[in-house]
Image (cartoon, rainbow, N blue to C red; front, side, top):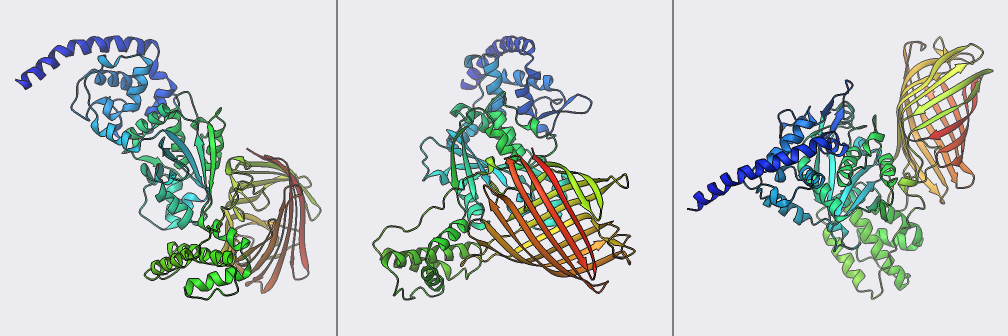
Length: 626
């Protein structure tokens, strides 16, 4: 009897739904909804060179129409048709593509009573389980040890209405990443640049990402709480539901984590078009700045320092005696603290606990004994009846969104050995040691795809002066507890002062190069960073006697930055050139003064000497960041 009643209801309902479909299709065509920018956002349509639209998703499960990937109008009509058809629980178009249906019903003012019965328990339970009321765009600082994160990373946190700053860790976070199964950095870089990986969204507890970034990778987190309404946040979740099982082509420079999160924010707020500003590449900090350009989009900014940042801060604040006792406590919990005041004893126990926990997470201590020591340190600290002596490290004055833009173009003049050149340079990303580091990680520099061209006025010829594929300086400062290795690596094409295989004061020729080294760096106060690195290099070119040469030696330098006096860099390098059996000395002096956040004047001088011969150059350039 129940089955008969159900069949009768469906049969009687069909004409009603058919009439409703007819009333929906006409205004949809009149309003040209299939050509609306928001429909293209939800379906990921992009315009090809022949001006036709094609979705970047090829998975047929993403479409209702068989022609959906290439035909936005057919997809919209098929969606409306499916909306008029009853379906089994979780199988209807409203359950599979809720963001599209929500927008269409709003645009066409479709009453709920006219929509065919489509129960969606799986979707409803998923959305209610996340219980999102607000959204936060989180930026994780750059991490030079991982190619996928060397420019930083962004993710989107979903906050509930009840959460406070103390309980934000319990929220869910939306992450997009390449689907890889390799730890080989070179393989990842190659496949990431060429689209060799698929990318997918995931949603997981925020505390897991905090543990990964803040603790394991020692990266500061910046939480930009967005001014999205609960309905906009829900629409973003609806769109995530539609794409969470979809693999997108992953490109490290373009279709990356930040680019895909822009699409999610576009889905949350119709008529917000963010990705169009990144047609070629998308650097996370640039996408962050673009989001914050939206009117009244930022509600609040929260800084979450990394474990290493907190350790360094407290090591600087504590006395030498406290730091020494803390290091002893890590190895021997019963170390006597005689000679320390009560507050200093508390500081020593707290510092020892934080340092041992840092070592434990980094697998720098015995994993089976550390938990017991951590408990003993907590017991010892609890016996001191005074408040916690820790302080939160102060938030840097400039956050990543306020730093200079990452792309840079410059024009200038250079003179060497009585030759004058006009110089043009372009760099898409990211930061070098003379750039203003406000908003960037101190001591970290990544020069990517830098091209430098020169026109020699005496010889009336243009030439490629430098083509840097990649140049990384990771100058992490040491402190009493954390003593990281500083390192650098660079590869590309450059001009070398040589001719017929030997050093020359008159000629320069192009050589390919790979160089790198490792050593230590140390901050002296807030403004000065000095470094000492071993250095090795390989150069390859026709101008070399046997087509290649190697050198090894040391590189020393200091960088100084002042808000009022700009950035200064002085370095010295000494290499023994094996094939020529000679020592080559190089000095570099650089100065940069900021006119504004995104414009600067740079002066630079270089000097090279080998035996009794030398080469020198000076130059000045105006830099614009965009």
